[in-house]
Image (cartoon, rainbow, N blue to C red):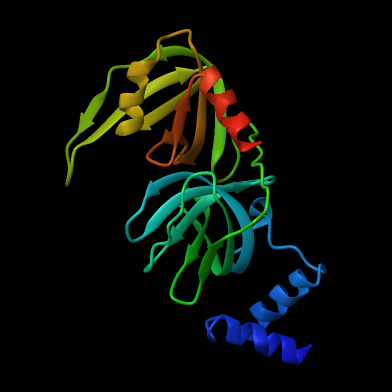
Length: 219
């Protein structure tokens, strides 16, 4: 077994340690699965996930990833991989930590991301929870966009969705031009901060048919 572990370490050009190589060997032997997003803890991690929403393709590469247990943020520093939304990826030697939007997986110099031949259908649950979450409902009111001046202009638009005040930032604020009051709205990948719910560049606003078309594409 030790010989196989060394072989895997050589396969990754020494970029992974013995512990990670041992986990990969166990996976290849069918004795261990990767971590699940919904159960991530801070520290070293490896997992499979679907790329759901690419926000930045520069350094750092920034995306939302998901599996059947939840969603989180992926940040890749340095060499940016050629990934597209819908790709299933394998992450080796990542580092999970808690950020202001919940758990995020960081890939640095010693981490690796590669496309994987695996089917993952992310699960979409609705309701507030820690980290990224989704809400849906009828738009009760759309308020005028406010502009806040600082180092750069920030556009904020509040909406009332059911009984929840939600603050949409920049492009998400602009997205509300597609919607009207009393229309049904699906908001994906929101986060809570200081008692307020925010939608930002990581989030998506979808009409009912757009949401179900997205789910169909993932099947």
